[in-house]
Length: 281
Image (cartoon, rainbow, N blue to C red; front, side, top):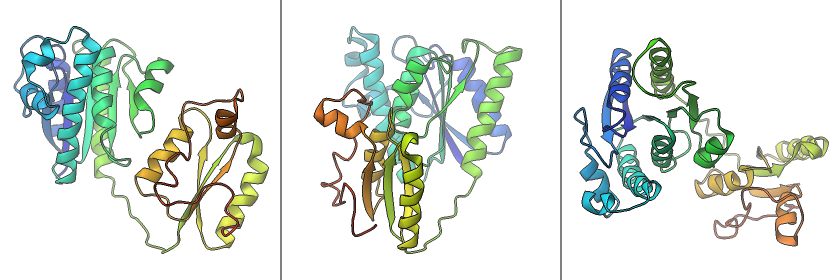
């Protein structure tokens, strides 16, 4: 049986988190409920208290409450909750995570999700799901599913009941989906490219395949370059990196197409060759 971590501020989103918890249990999964609230008392009992969350961030709740900026306080709580979530995942005690919230709740839940590795099911039910700036700021380089609530996430009604139930089904379904990894023994080469070079990209990918490697392509725009660094850090790349787009060069040479990320900066630290890999091509 899979266990889903449900995260919310239980002084403001207890009704909504409690409903999602019930829907997950109806689908046959277990739930661990984590409270990230800062101000009022939790309206339902959590499995992981806000005091435990604050302690995992190296603070007391009193210190958290004394932080004047709400965003900073929530940020501290998301760090602590992220530390807890990662430990639970590494111990095999959770198999997915779902959060529910508005602006601050989205920052809290997404911050926890970013602490977890790529591949762990992550669903964030948010009233800000149609706001591109919020999505960009909170997803970054992780595989977070931003589930647009359409309405504000307040109370249970015909619309929110539908949204919350479907979101619960999404995270349970992902947790139950087994990913089979084929051990081919082939090394993976990362290609960072753009649509404007697609004709060349296809030829490069085919040459990579023909020489016995597996290509993994990233769009070198937005958070794509930062995602390059993330997958290198996570150990997905062991055969080399090919930079075939202008963004990185523009960044270091003062060009105009500077994107959100900084690709390849950690390649050498990870022991991976960057640039055009003649030994691969």
